Length: 193
Image 1 (tube, rainbow, N blue to C red):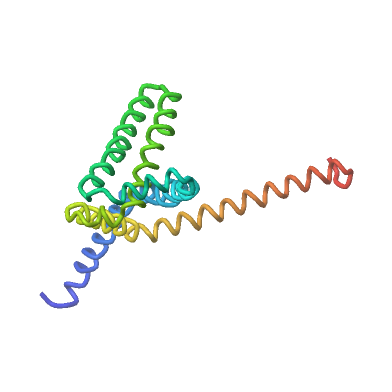
Image 2 (image 1 turned 45 degrees about the vertical axis):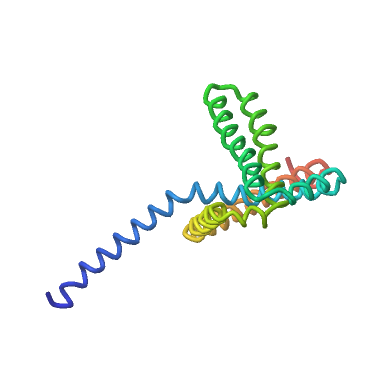
């Protein structure tokens, strides 16, 4: 096969590969948005709240006690709120599907929220101890690598969405500002009705 005849076929394969990659990226986008939400809202908010709570003397004593425990016990204590977090998420989803919005909200905010805070607190308090357990460190590292891969793979799409949303938000803000200016002008008699 000569080179000029192969060029259209190579182009088609490249286009197909790009299209397939775009579809894969779009399928990964919801997961990436959830990861961004968890990282920027849930984890950052939880860390700020935990920093505030950690100033209490009794919490400091409990932290020091946890740090003296053997690593396997710390892993077990960490996995308890993790399990509660996932089970309560499932429970809240079931309640939501059944139409019980209040119950789903209560479970999500109080039970799941408390489990997330407790798990994060244990992780922050005993990170060195947790990472000394080999299987935990391997799983932790694989989760971090997978998260980073998803976020990097979808970064161009997320950046375009961010730019588009901010452009729309700026336009909306400008329209609101213009409407307020017009209202004020009408109220003060400087504009015609």
